[in-house]
Length: 165
Image (cartoon, rainbow, N blue to C red; front, side, top):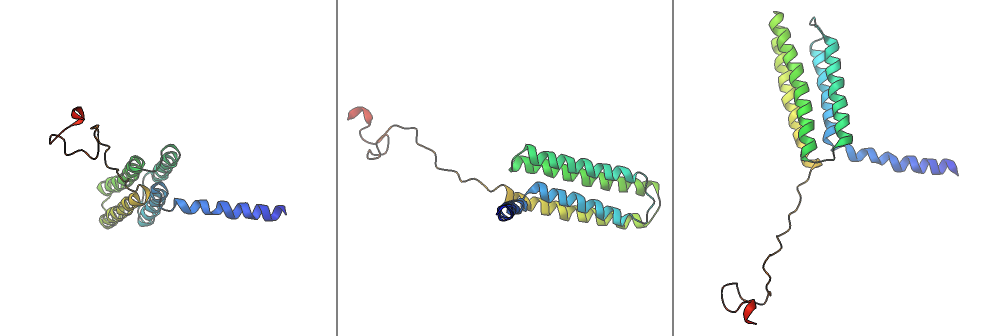
């Protein structure tokens, strides 16, 4: 009996993770992780100074994103904060590759830098698309009239008004 109850609870709560697929924080976490692995793959044959800082930057960005998912509800404000975190992380990685390019005279770094910039732009566009899913536009209702008048009266200013009833 308890096995079936436990199985029912597991099946019921397993569907909760599917609601987060359109979440900008979850998408941003994937982008940061993918960008980190892509940059590490491209820079594999290049002598790096401070590869530990790259991991630290990634972990810092991921912890900030995790904090945003708990502290702010879905909407434009959270999306802008998420976008800023991902943008600053990717810019930091690209800036470190540019610094490495300035120090070392490897022709391979130009190609790597161009690939990282194009990869960044594609991933940021994907992140912008997640805003439409996360924050649908609210419908606005027509304003309530502030004039006290009967709907059967003529247009105000034409004919009798409330004082001549």
